[in-house]
Length: 464
Image (cartoon, rainbow, N blue to C red):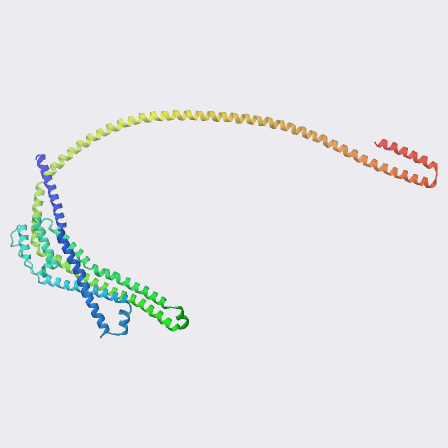
């Protein structure tokens, strides 16, 4: 088959994908005015009626507290503080929302049981899915307002409008899943007010606790503690009663709301499951048409398999040749780049090695000069130390001579000391002799004394 025909088939497949994207876009797009009107209606329905009925229920409840249901316990918990009153009003608003939701769900189940859907008549209608959907949509317009407002009525009407707008049943199963998820999201959004009240009710209780404790501490005046201790303690207990009663009331009401919301949510989940089953039963003929259309598409795809296989083989051969040429070019380029890089690296390495060698030689020469200077300094230090050793030796020899001289001097000094003592003895004897001779008056003794002195002088000369 020519390549142009093959490319036309591929283009047809791409246009099919684009049409699928267009269908998805149309399915997800909603007119702005219609969405805004529905949003306004939902806001009024989700907020207005619960607030209205909740306010009425709150007024009725407090009227009953003042009348038939009047007792001390109810007065303490529901009328003890403005926070308790606000908590009770919010509880009744949430209960009104849940009750209205429950009544709506009961009506929805009634519609499921009693609605007469033309599911069995689809086989008798023309096999054209567009005309079939058009006839079903026209018959759905005659349903009652209650059926049209129900999950089932809106689901079937929306699916039929989608089939008519898309001119066929293409992606009808995807549309069924989308509408089911959309209803599940609407179910979640329907309990927004109740979830907010469940969250805010304990917060109000804690606020009442803080206010009650503050009131209790504020009532404890110094004069009351000093004058009337009983009144001060009663005021303290009254404030604490308010604090803990508001918290207990808020937690109790929030727990009740949580359980009631859970049961309502499960009830609505069962309803949506039943709506899914009913919708598939009502549109079973159209789903069968889509399956038949899908089978025809499969046959056409099988008939074109050989063409696609041939195109794939041709493209594979082209890609193989192109890749082989690119591989050869890459190898040639890699070899050239390798040789070029080798030469460049060799040149740069040679220059780097020469530079490193020159720098190393310069450093070696500087190190050798430093070593020579250090050796000269060591030789100079060695000569200086040798001279100092010679001087020390001379000093030691001189010190030895000084020691010998000192010893001789000490001997002479000792000898002189001994001689001096002898001279003193002689002088003493001479003085004694002279004294004796003076007393006796003998001249011979004087001559002897002179001789002795002469002899003593000779002795001194010898000693010297």
